[in-house]
Length: 494
Image (cartoon, rainbow, N blue to C red; front, side, top):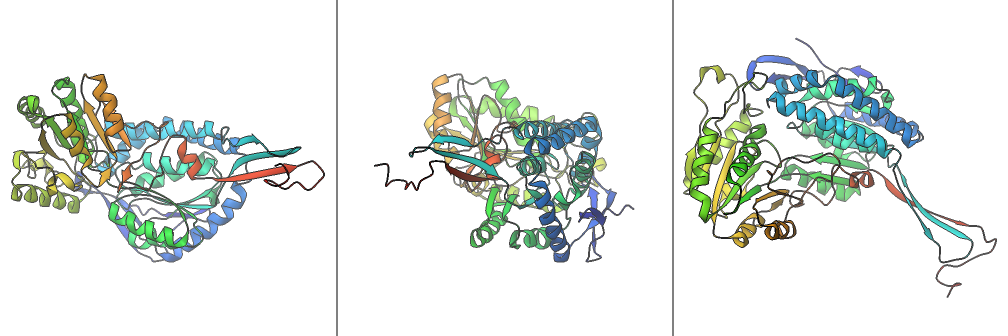
């Protein structure tokens, strides 16, 4: 058995608690990956103290030089893409094609961040007074606490960490306890690329201990959290009380709308990928399918035919379409919602049970599940499940489809399939989501565009793209008066 360590104060170290937790393959729980630190508050304290020292050094490193480190990180990720994909699939279950995409997103984010080291733009503007210069520029903030989920073990940490680093901040990184091995290897790569050791701290452990200690620490002025809306509410309350800068990315209940004029085979491809890719464990997963009357029955028939052919299994085995859920609690939650759907009158059209194949008996597998006759406003249609469960809702026209899409508390992603360009642009305007795809599924964000949602999905900030660099830096305004005399703005010039 391998015991993995925290990385604190420039060294790999055991937890102060002396406690450990096991990390097992969710496709075969007999496969033990290793033990990881169940860290405590003292570990967090040491990590933050080291990160403060790292910040004092790193903030004085020129931003282009910080970008150079991230370019080298991108090179290392590219050279180890297959290795990283395989260890991620072993650790969290999704097929290799998906974990390769996870690594590629990290590579793309690294190269994008590297160039932003030369583009941390400010503004120069005319002063209203003579012989006076006015400008703004970006400054780093301090120690950032990053708390990340299991479903994208590499991509999401890179979304948060690379912009934070290129802006000059130091990082305390708390990964999900379900995917600690990927985090360990990622930090090894950061160090190999030349990131100063006190700039990055890796503290493994449980959210209610390690995550809570990071969130509540007065010397962590910046937080970025991806996870459930319930946990995000606690993080938001704490950050508000302590005046911390906070980026939240939380739940979703995303809908794909298919209108009568759509390319139906393309739309079937989209919903299969959106609903059952990553076993439905994406914040952008397609959990609702809104179908117009005219195509409803034949679309459902074709969807069931295609979904029935999806193959469950170990994501490292060729031909696997759908991997396991991350753990037994997730599978139990899916089963609970199957029961809720039946109780509320929805029709179980496919799946709804654990597979009976003996080869899958040691993993957290669940059959791709489709409910029809789902009513808008029902729990199945309203609540995030985070599993391979798709709810089909019938509507009469595009206006009703838009209302159903908007009738949930979340607002992350949406999708519309149509050949009507007018409706496509109307959807971009009317659908109440941070992201809308036209003739594409609800998943597929690209690294150079902002990512995030509205309503209870987030708090207004975005991951990715150019906006995130503003989140991880402060605007500083400078005035230089070279007139040699006292000039009073708004007074002496009018």
